[in-house]
Amino acid sequence: MSSRADFLRSLPYFATLGAEEIKRMEKDLLECSFGKGELLFLEDEPCQGLYAVRSGQIRIFKSSSEGREQVLLIAKPGDTFNDVPVFDGGPNPASASALEPSTVCIVPKETVLSLVADCPSALTIIRLFAARLRHLTLLVEDLSFHHVVSRLAKTLLELAVVEGGPSPVPRLTQDEMAAMVGTIRDVISRALRALEKAGAIRIEGRRILVVDPEKLRGMI
Amino acid sequence: MSAIPEIALEKCTGCGDCVEKCPTKAVELVRDKAIMVRPEDCNYCTDCEAFCPSGAIKCPFEIILTKLEPQS
Image 1 (cartoon, rainbow over the protein chains, first blue to last red):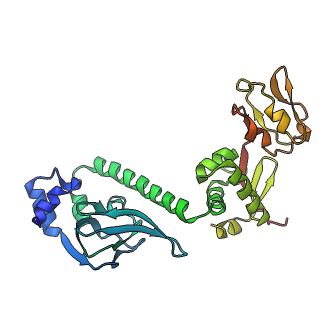
Image 2 (cartoon, each protein chain N blue to C red; image 1 turned 90 degrees about the vertical axis):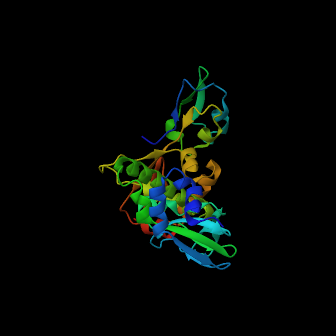
Image 3 (cartoon, chains in turn purple, green; image 1 turned 45 degrees about the vertical axis):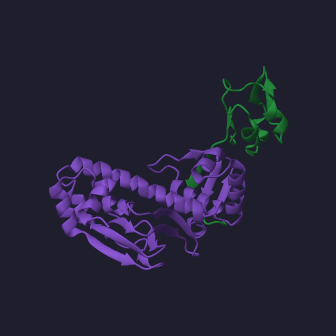
């Protein structure tokens, strides 16, 4: 196996670093081994740092409250993961477990961020990209685990505003709702009827009235 | 006045699909363009929007948060 410095240099993240910076990274580097099936970290836990696979395979996945799983990535030797929380400062967006006996290197969050510490504008841009990537990860979760009625309930809750308030009332066709929720118009039509039947909304002409936000929230 | 679909006449090709599908016969072709001739009969079912092949008809919904209780 190559030295830790060579391994760091082989990662796209650190490929352009000079010898001094690599040395600094190497000093802070943690190396951990995990058995097959062992958890590296859980979704929503505080972020430890940027992970890189030295050997083995790591499964990055989201879990639903019912225990279903959606795999986002199988990280192989040389792959990095958990970069989003390093840069946007949030918790781990997904969980990780070893698919086989694996060794990973962890570069602490602060060490990674120190590489761009002298360029705050670059850090701001990276933070924005990371936040967008987190948003897309949440979208994957939504599309994987929530059925259309639930996704539409969430969208209506996010969009609905009080009439005459500071924000303009949003206007959406059923095609536009379908595009937001990731389905087709016919399904939206049925989902709206289901929400109305449940008493969460009322449709009056062109108005979709969110009459029971708590009920709507309970359907997510 | 009750809600009626919005028709972009410049996009309307006069195919008549909306006239055929409208369950209340609220829409008709007038000089080869779809017109809501009986707006009071329109129940905003959105069938005309669904079937319009040129995307000329839009039925947007306003999404309003109300403090009303479900039964009130």
